[in-house]
Image 1 (tube, helix red, strand yellow):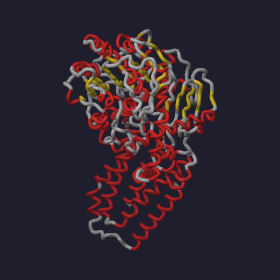
Image 2 (image 1 turned 180 degrees about the horizontal axis):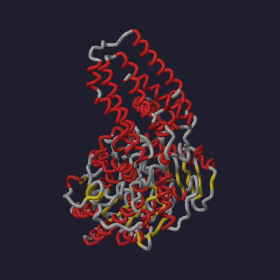
Image 3 (image 1 turned 90 degrees about the vertical axis):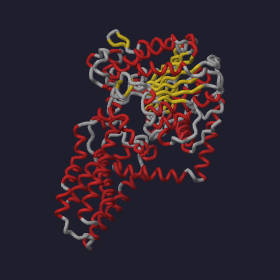
Length: 636
């Protein structure tokens, strides 16, 4: 019977994440349990029974066509989740799914994620569609089929599905003994508990509930509390340091480098520096070497938003795709208010992460995207960074002074494969691996960065500008955190004399995977100094405005000025944090699942000691979410 066969095949597909995991699905905090997988499988079957049982009342031919369409839709959902998991380590959020049309813009990364087994997700759909003409001929004489027997069977299956939904997914969500559904950092955890389809339905219901909630009196109180929270710490966060205004009236050139992490900046392989130009530039700058990525689901767009606006990224999805029409007031808008010409440049499509729509709202008066650049050498997704810099420097030169230029690079995007004709650094036994490709890609970028510095120097822009360079987010070296650590271990143990990683949680390799460089170069190499204070993306905007002598006391910001020399409380989207020598990594923003270390001594710390900091982290994240979702950023 086609109905039963297709139903069972779809059930098998949507239960993909509930099978015993391969190594890339393993997680140190969340082991696989057979009983949990059975619960999720029953939950998935319940949802499918509710969805499919009414089809029994249709004519066979019509029922078959709808079954094929539903099979295709379900296959696409599972396929999308599988690819998303391979890249991000999690299934898609509803917000991310709404931007699924953008996958064509990053097709190279998508192709790199494909595996031969993926064809099985669509094989039955192809066979079913091929058999459609034959099936319709065989059932042409059949009646509607809405007989008493069919009605009884359909009703029984529907009722059984409802009962099972209450007994399994709904009960599990209500109990939420492990806080998976409360914090929702890893959606994958929820899918493993109640089934993939049920989790997506749950998340969709949450969005509807939120749309209703934001109009309630309680939401109004939350908005008031969030604004009060920002106001309460603003005086301390905006206190002036001796470096206030040392670059007053200078241009600002901000370069956000795709996937740039800290470790390659000072790494040598067989006596050859990976990034000699970047390293030399850092030594002549304010160099923050304990700077952490605060990006989340939105990757590049998170790096952009957090650094320009000084608010946290969303728990799921991208701010720029979820709230593209909001009012924003970060670095570019504030500088425009002070007479700066502001421009952004990215040698890719402006539709990616809604840049074409959001950049003007961020305060950029001009934006240059792929269509404005002449053809040139391509690497990966598009125009090579070297060519991008060559064509962008003249555009900066033409800007009214002072100006702000925000440059987003592209060549070092995952999967970091350089064209064959480009010479590449020898990485030994890491050749062909993701981390080997990454090192070679960063080495090639560094050569282009050196050329950019030469151009800025010859044009006189280098000594008339503050140049800021940092990474947008960490690189993705494997299909799980452990894979990434294994790749890094091969590199760092051999070429940086690191000790091999400990079993379980090793804070050193966690830091290596999450640390980025932040380099702020002042005219004439002024105030060059290496600073090891803890910092994150949210601290960039207050620091830059401080150096330019612009009071940001009325900016809706959660970051602080780093030139004060104090460690900042760096909160990550899942509630983990680093503060001075203390690192606490958690799954659910609480001490209950946290692993804390003293990063100076390596000693294990009791998470309960830092309960106040966990509370503060949750308050900050919640307040930022309220400000963004409530569109509470004032224009002035």
